[in-house]
Length: 269
Image (cartoon, rainbow, N blue to C red; front, side, top):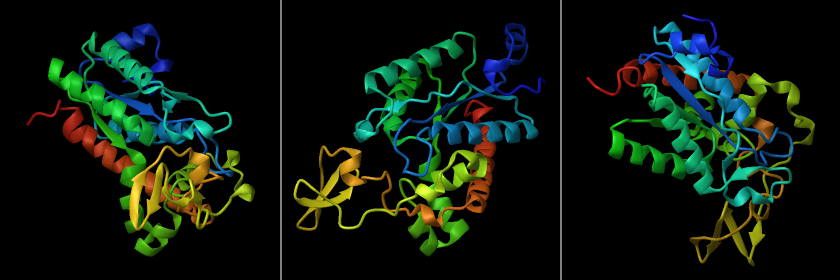
């Protein structure tokens, strides 16, 4: 087995030798949007870092695992207000996923696992994965890292502290990033989440959400109307490299186990 993990680093001959039907391929996806005044916009950096560690762990469990080039641009949502942000329309993202699935499947590479780090990618992933199972029988799961992390943080930090740190611009992404690439963070620029934020004359209840008479309504808000500094609920002041190390280790353990027990077996048995 080659020491190379990134498919982009394989030569064409190495690709023929090592990307066999037994190989598992991880497809990392992220976004390029406001993650808070302190954090790099490319959350795909964290997703790719976790995917690489997951591939290493899966190999240690005996599964030949490789990482495809990351899709850095997320599905467009309310973050169009991000200065310098880049997003793909839902139709474009669906087309990209379709072409990636096709590129691997035509060579018999159908043991795929998506490692996702952006909520705006979820609907496109579900649409393509459902269609491929219905038309070809190929099953592709998606591991939404941050959704899983919110529950893991309760065990790592305790429910009370997790509630203080968890949210957009806070945990899990800030702590994960501080673990993998602290040198590009600007924690001196961090801002606390807003209090009593209002838009359209009503209370903001979250991204694209407002509250009236105790009821929550969907609203076409831009992200900066809900969180002017990219932070919602989670305070980055509570994020640490130690939390990121512990959290990434749990994510890697879960992902590697899933790869060994199910993805590598084609979800049979």
